[in-house]
Length: 140
Image (cartoon, rainbow, N blue to C red; front, side, top):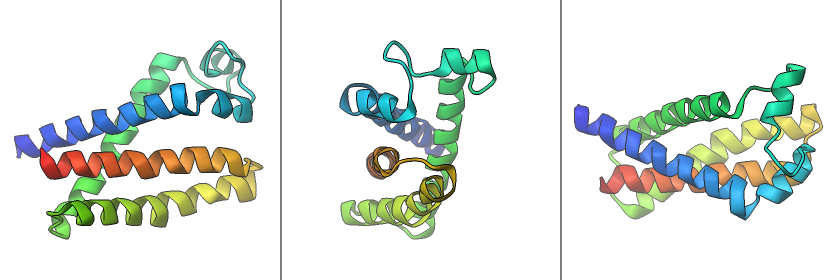
């Protein structure tokens, strides 16, 4: 229904806001250091010039769309399993973030020479973002 999509969009915005905090004031400096990005930006501008990235506005639009589909899938799981409690929402978020995202992202360490520090920043972001999104979906 239309209300479901509104909840999904609001939950997407909430999860996206977690990312803004995570990669901004909370862990932004450490993340940029681990990514070898300069202090003044998040690497997107110079990456675009070298063919290894995209302009920040495009990256953020793409990130929002990707987050929308992540939250859409989370909403589907919550409905499929009739999640109606706080503990259920947190449990399904942990199952999805640890069972799918954390395991998949570990391949970045194993095959792409990413550091464990970067892995923990990125993975913990998704854990928190999915919990926040599930709570929005539960209560809106």
